[in-house]
Amino acid sequence: MKGTMMNPRPMLSPDVLEDIDLNDRQLHADYDLSEVWRYLRAERPFYYQTARGSQPGFWVVTRHADCTAVYKDKTNFTAERGNVLPTLLAGGDSASRTMLALTDGDRHTQVRNLLMKAFSPKMLSNIGQSLRTTVDGLLRDAIEKGECDFARDVSGKVPLVAICDLLAVPQEDREYLLSLTAHALSADEADATAEDNWTAKNEILLYFADLAESRRSSGHNDVVSLLATSSIEGEPLSDGELMANCYGLMIGGDETGRHAITGGLRALIHHPDQWRMLRNGEADLQTATEEVLRWTVPSLHGARTATADVVVNGKQQIRAGEIVSVWFASANRDEEVFRDADRFDLNRTPNKHLTFAFGSHFCLGHYLARMEVEAILDGLRRMVDDIQQTGPEKLIYSSILQGISSFPALLKPDRRVPPQT
Ligand code: HEM
Image 1: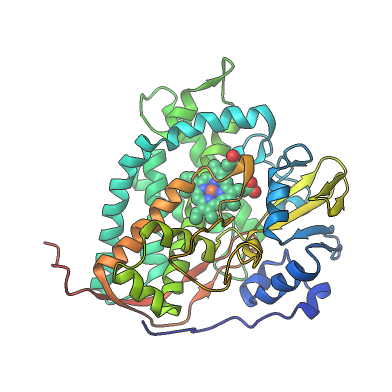
Image 2: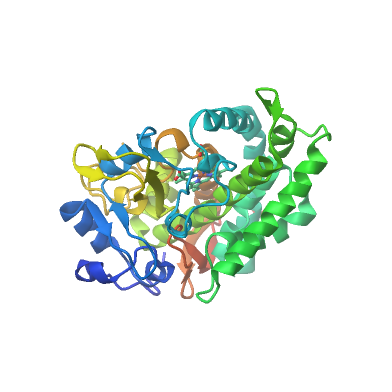
């Protein structure tokens, strides 16, 4: 494994904390915030970032125990006004009470129970087979190509195939949807605007409105049909709920998964001892998958609004109406919870990472995401002898997600594997 840190981000000093804006997407692309998180966990576990210009202030929660306390408190916190800083600070999310992630209370339980059917082991086992075939094919193509852009050629395709299988999206529409999802939450380019995000999001919503309409009476056996033909308390889901939930699955499942996969490859390159262990069969695949997810933590943060005055974990008073951001990226490195937290250790157990959040909104697609990462690790282990990074990586611009949009790499074949005919 060669091609170590091609372009490491400079470490940001906690001294500048009062001058930076943690909601600034450029900040996360340009700097490594590990020292800032470490300082906040140790000294100011409930830090209040004051208003920056017209942008309101918000709480920044960085310890694992405090993050889980906020996320499990359904009485005093709501996700209905938004569940990430950019929308909350801009005044709220238009998908409130239509998208599952932005719905609380009984309605959340009812819709979640409905969607859970689509994530049943039976539904997913069909997808699992197609996923493994896809992953092996993509890795084989990447190996044959010589040099590839792993982020685009491999990671960029795996989650989309899985989620499109789940939603039964027609083959001919898949490329188009991929290009839209890449722009709806983050931006591969620094100069992409909020309008670009907004336009992409609306196009996805419209696409699913049409698809759902065509599935209302189609007799298909997929998630879109399930949503389009189900009722709750005798009432069908509204068009808004249909669109927003298809969008939620697409967006929740695509970009996050891609970043876990590319980040996993990058971590293996940077930790050759762990790659050797994986290749030699000295790492359990499921355990290794959990560590890749802890390490890459594609969702940097989540957020809630307090609905009442509350004292979190007996430590910090939060007032009704205040916005609280919860930093999974920091919680996953909390030295109180993870022994040797800054070590990438494929055999780490226990591994109570918060990559999929916690509580009632715990990621619905966690099992599918795990299957994707595991399929990649398994494919690399079986088919690849050596991996090199051959050019600088490009990071995405986002305060919601962290990940890599371009990762030039060379995958050398494992000669022990007979070529596929
Ligand atoms: C919720 C992360 C993959 C669908 C969440 C949340 C996080 C998360 C942090 C909680 C958000 C909050 O409440 O603030 C991730 C990561 C993934 C991943 C890191 C990949 C590595 C997927 C996949 C799907 C999916 C593959 C579906 C195909 C959802 C849905 C919710 C959710 C529907 C909302 C659940 C609810 O509100 O009850 N995810 N996710 N996610 N995720 Fe994922």
